[in-house]
Image 1 (cartoon, rainbow, N blue to C red):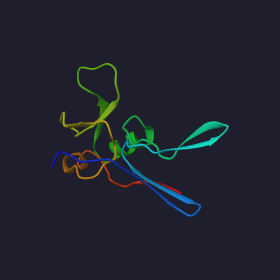
Image 2 (image 1 turned 60 degrees about the vertical axis):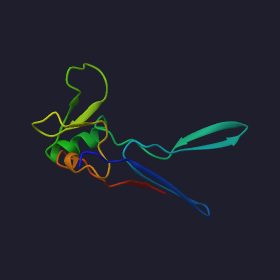
Image 3 (image 1 turned 180 degrees about the horizontal axis):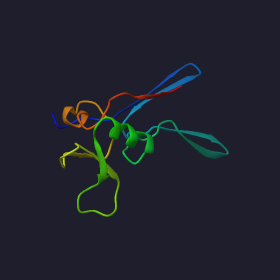
Length: 110
């Protein structure tokens, strides 16, 4: 299967907020007290992130810009292929990209 998805979930229970993130879906929290304050609840999982890049390379994948492009985000590829060319380093459901180091493990923030 060559398709997958990212996921973000936010649960608020009493005074506790839990954010779970896989991929580049994003959650933010806005609060207002005379002025708006915006807080990031999640961090994007992309090959541009040095931790994610090292993990991908360790698992046998390849990270580089799209073929023929000098700019733009880094992408995840199989070691000896132009596939899948994903701009995310974590997602679920993409079996081909898992061979290139894609994982589905979320980051969880409480």
